[in-house]
Length: 448
Image 1 (cartoon, rainbow, N blue to C red):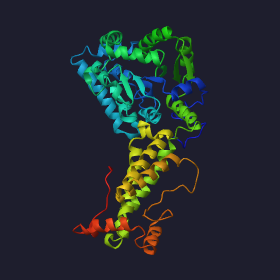
Image 2: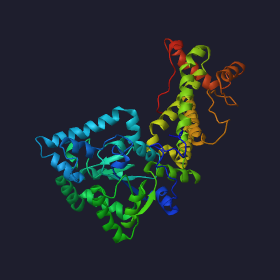
Image 3: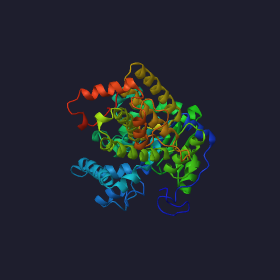
Image 4: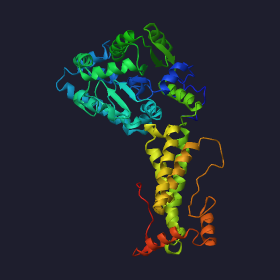
């Protein structure tokens, strides 16, 4: 999407409006005081995903395309058929499978979730969607049943799925009867109590809803009651001007732009405050990871272990870099590696562990942690335009200068035999204990 022009009129770009975000709202988001209420418009029912939405698909099945029924009414009518409920659930699953089987469609359906994933201050999400994209792409723990709430404090990020989940078909809220039961549950049960607690302590932003949605109307009636009691303000993000006007008349503050682009704008503001890393950091880190993996795979081709025992520490060091960058990529959407302050604290923790390993004369551990720290520092700093920002490819005890290439490493160990005698002796002793030391691949596992 970055390759698209700003004035592009394609389906991806035309809703990207550079909205002016209220500073107070940005501050609340970055302070973790905002909950997103998300509807189908940011997921599978976005017009960017398929040419027909689920409502239209179901209406076509029962020849009800000319009816002006609400979503729950249509689902209720569909379920009146023999095995109607089972068929409806099968259609829901089939729709999700179709989308997930095409990477292009899945990317469209999950663009909001991926953008939200790195926005680490957001801890609470409420959704009426059935899909599992918040779980898959933001590392959110789902809360669907009242019994789930016992583990609310355990989760670092939570998604309250008030209309059920495709992972638990019995919880799906679709028909008029389902909506009635859901309304009662939100008024009387624990899930409803948790929702009211969120409303009492958080600013609400609606994204992915139409003013005419039954989902939105039911939710907003509940929200408005709480907001009126607490004098809190709710916001809505929508790319449609007419919708924005209707929302404004209902008492919400509209932000006229696409939901995914709204998150991008928020993160741009966060980067300016120097405690948030841009998503480009992950791109650069992925390039460095591939570079190190390639170098690591060739290390045994360059050196005979018994002829150069010091290579053990370079291998462990490279494992440290690789494992740090792999974990960063794997946990991208948790947002933990977008938080610069957290990264600085993490580096300090590893420096303390490394100092302890050095005192223990655990030299493979020292080398491994050195690589891990280098990987973290690179991710923390790589978005800065600096051609000199690299990670040394090799490591040797006693080296005063960074060893960026194998040639640097080879020249150092050849001109400085046993530069660090204790580590050299331990490496040689380890190799001597092996049956076939020159045919093993030195590897440090991702634990200490």
